Length: 427
Image (cartoon, rainbow, N blue to C red):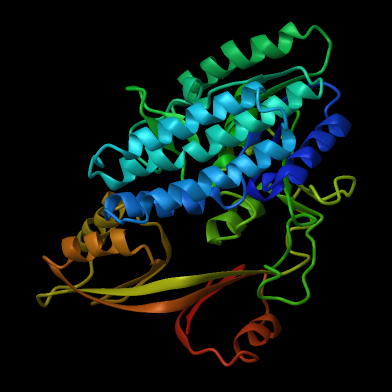
């Protein structure tokens, strides 16, 4: 029996949290276990700040790097007071490698540089956690996921080579787990990242550690995958926006895919399909209350429509695109426009077209949008509004819509409804 556990940044944000992970593994891992770990706390955000400072020749770059080093060193020192413990040497090597990389000029391919820099968070966190587990007597082996998970060179959105990835995972990880000969064993590796054929690091998209775990579960025919979060399970709304939320005790793969696609932040959008293909159940459980049931995601659809779900995406941009001549928005125009979005790796959350305009709602990524507007501006008029919010309601009725729109006095700029889903771009 093989299970795959994924721990996100909040679950390993400090020394006590790391100890809690070890306690959970001791209670919940009697057999073979693959553990996928994200960067600690807000390290990914901090590394993104480092990357931007590097690109902009910001004089604060050394201070930003030191903030990251100091943050981890506090955790390391608390977990390993003995300065001669190997973890000190191993993490110092990683910090030195990061600093050395940032001493060279950027490659000036932002997404490529992003993958090479930001991925250090996962390498550091898994090094620390594997050393703690070994020190506490676990049969744990650290794996470099870049030697297992092969992608193409779509930087920041690496597309997985499933055949090669599967064979590499089975060859290396399965052989380690099987060598335990009936004893508990933990294979620990990084989420979020992989490698292209030339060896350069790639990443799978923001919050991609969930997807990593699903890739391993698929390759190993796992019996179950568990995502450990700081919430009691999958909630029907973000507590930041709703004072009263309900836990979804059970939903289907299909419903989970829909929620993730529309922006539910608990699950990465690509996570569910590999599990569905092999009927591997997914549980979302609380690392704060690990004995609670959490949420089960499986084939059964019977509970999907019992509770409406609300998804809020802030910092959205509504873009309106229209031809410069007197032509219509036809199939050829849509094909050309969508190709530009794809070329700039911009995901469309909502789209609507009329005879002479095509409107879309997207996340506000200034760097990518400036490139998009430049490319579209050659043949189309482009107008846009920023600072908006996209609200999605699954299994809605008029009362749920009124609850969201009327009580807060929101102005609706764009609206779309299907049988199960209603979406509103508002300000």
